[in-house]
Image (tube, rainbow, N blue to C red):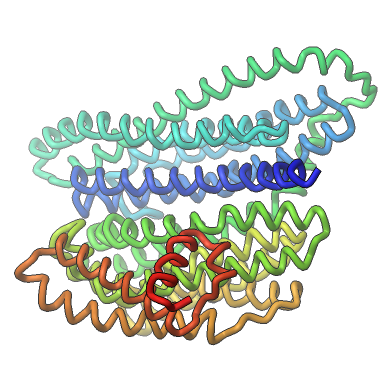
Length: 547
């Protein structure tokens, strides 16, 4: 009996673990795409790409990316009542609502493509990319609808597979079509004597690649749905429910369920698009700088390096979130509190040294990826704390949702968004720090979310961290190793090169941090058994007689 219970717990946690793991893998593929496209686009082209891609993400935040969660919940409610046919109608209602909304947006985008590119994005050459990208809105909504339906039916395998396939296909097709359109844009640019045509047309090619990837993924999901429908025919024949949900009722349920999630996503992820517009419009109105080039460098270099570290650290939140969901359903609140406390400690144990090491090794790491880029190095040095803030903020948002406190998470995110927007405006117009204002804005946004959500969770869970062990000791150990790494990097960089310097310093920094952490009793044996990589750290500590 006990073994059966353990298997059930493991199964429940693995489902959530796989889903979030897939999201992080997809994000890493997107970042790999930015690296690949950066060589093809250059900084100016990456500025064009950033504007189009972030605008598309912002539109999807408003139209479709909140649908899977809302639809899955709506489907589960119908299934719990044995209403298989109504569960199927939820899929049709979601498709009807999503396609209707996205078509309206597409029509507006097509009609206003030139205005959007000139007045909003301040990039007249991007009008064709705006026009080409419009079908992606409809396709993305349809994909989201099928994903939500499968999740509601109790299987997340199609969602996970399709999510990874979409990014792989987008990367491959984007590169191929980007090259084709780049050559055409280069010839056109030579004729009109404008070198910006090549990167602008490359972005059009990447947009075509994204759409091609979405079409293939949508066909895959439709095929899975056909197979799934055939398997459900027997169950549907036994469904004797007389009440048939109207599409209006289904849409209302989707909006009521999904609106808080959608607004939270807008306040968190939408800040990237809003901050980009604030920066570009200010620079355009008040300086002679090429805002497209500066933002392209920021997005394609700084954003990629920070993003890679954030994704790696965010992998640690997957299993604890699934466990918290599992034990919260069982009303085992003490266990929920222990898991939450353990993950906070895990994030600080790994996040603080990652942030410190990136700050002191910003030059060799940036040079290893992109060559000498002084602006990126400075931004990494002053804002590497994002590596810790973003996973902490995301973890706290998810936990509040699981605990039924989604409106509290929404309120905190809204406050943080308003404050960070004001901070970015002040930094641009008052402090005149240029592109660094965007990086500082991200720090402010995720820092405030982490603090506000953390305070709410500590109050709700009656949790008070051991500040010395959880925060002070990891920071002290990281700071000592960071100073030593900085000295070693300065001595090695010119002679050994960026790759060798980064490898040696990271290795020595990790070893030094582990030894100091164990010597200062920043983590004990029981905690090591629960954190990722804890068994290896335990063996090291025992061999050094520190445990």
